[in-house]
Image 1: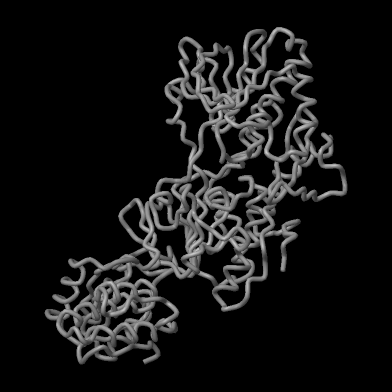
Image 2 (image 1 turned 90 degrees about the vertical axis):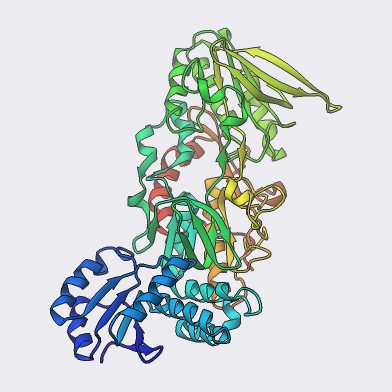
Length: 562
């Protein structure tokens, strides 16, 4: 036969995915029954459906049974069903899935119950089938959980080469970069959302300088070709078994894992906020639907009090809270309204910006707009109906006083936390983010796991610009780990925050670990420039859609390259 089969006993043989055209050869070889263990549609239209195969098998007198086995742990029910088929179906029987490993694992689990000493033999056979050494894939030893050992072997054989959690900037970008380097990789992206957003432009939308429709595209249009989109949410990990658990009840196996689901906006941590967002003068550029409302409020406010808030770190784009203030204030100044509007910036932090070099130039704009700064002032409650914002204000001795402040416009930046499924997992650090070595972005306890973007524990600024650099670090280091090579790249902590201080002026803040300045251009980075506005408003969006998400790595090399 041209079809390669493996004999498991006198009655059962296994093989890889078969086609309709293979059935004549299978019948000629004497097979009386076929068991399909591969779920339909795993490869879309490329894979023949079980109904097509069953219909084609009927004229040959072959019994065709569909018993799909999802990638992941094998249920007792499926094991018993497979055992019953082996007993009742006429032989010889040919079982298949994508690689044959699911059928082999089912058979091994049955044999394990009948002959406990068979387990180690089966695991080694499964490893040999996948071309992996036993010590390489870390299958639990037989002295632990025997069923787990066999399930782990099955999972490894059917696993994706790489699973990426998150379809944001980091997830799409790193997948594209990996596929440019190794086109044959089988990569899955776990992402429930059907839209992809260019979030850095939302501040511009809130300032009337960008079209909101240009910040969103269909997720299907940005998923890299040949990557498999798993449109559901990740809810947990089994890193010892190389599994990600999904919200739809499935588990998905991986050889290497990249964790980049982003950071969660915790709106619920501010009492009353969710009930009043988008009305009563309460807005936020951190929400796709609300950035246009920010611009509406700015245009229509003629007098009164405008409050802008910033929560405790970490947050994505630490400059965005004050950028909203600068753009609104610039509009009011240019339209001769600022004398009638009291602007106040309330930040839970003790400084205006975390990199000291940029504080003096920013203070010049604070003075220009006559803005009041309230440090150590954390928004805890919003009464939208009465337009009252409530803050906890901490003094120099750590004492906290609660204060109510009226407003006519309130721009809120919500507290931000790591996704719950990471915080509750063994991958998390003390703060709940996916723990990594900040220089290599590899997990310190699980060598086949990497993380980047807002969900990782690296102490860099959480910006799209940081993810742009991290993509190269992870892509090259992950492949080096896969191929047993030394890591070629070291991350220098690069992040960038184009501080939009007015319509047409941007301070392009670029910096790394420890606040070290890392300017791309040979210009004083602390000076607001129209050139930087052009980059922010025109060039960067184009580079995002056409470069970063396509695996084109322009200006991405870290100064920490070894």
